[in-house]
Image (cartoon, rainbow over all chains, first blue to last red; front, side, top):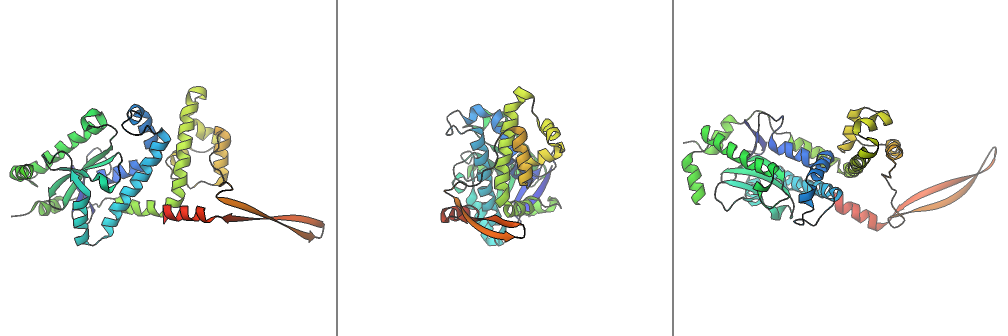
Length: 180
Length: 145
């Protein structure tokens, strides 16, 4: 498992041994790939048309996702072009805690990318420092509801263990974060 | 004592993520990839629809188009800057319409007939002038500007 720099000195992503690219880059490749998206929405059509969303067709879902990814990428690209000071604030404003701040797992702030199903997941190491662990197209309410989102929870746990075992963060650090 | 960030920077990979380089490329190509993505989705949906009827697959489509399966894969990933000739070939083989010239609402064809005289006699030359309406232009600027 490797940690790869995305841009600047404070945004990173994990690269897993069974993948050829870091998670950040891999996900944006998928979210820009009509073939992958068409297959994904055909496979998950019952979730797509369950009423949780506005029952879009597969074609509409693919086109929407391409548009969301474009917008998502634009926000991040602008941050990457900013000077160091600016993008520190930028990163803090675009991520929000995933589950009631119970531990340091963060996801992209939905208000910044409109209300859509794309999710990036990150561990917040300290203020202004994030490591992307993965991401998903989340069509259901809970991450536990589907295998492809449940896997992301396992990845988050695996990454937390890695950071503890390599001494990048310590247990005390995690506890402090849980209590904050 | 070192901070977590300092400890990360000690072990961070020498390779930087290719994300930014790819994003620059994607942003540069948006004008045509927006269209090639739409064409890709239509082709993929048509292959899916025809598969139970005539066994259509990307491989079969490649054979019928006399191109490689790799080429078809590039097309269905929206990464091929298609020519009109290729689009027409897809349309013919799949029996669908992939590309339409904007309707008269978005643009109008102004036909100006000019008569020229050649050595062999009077030959009518038809000159077409494509006039884009403001509505079409502002839509494009809003989307890609």
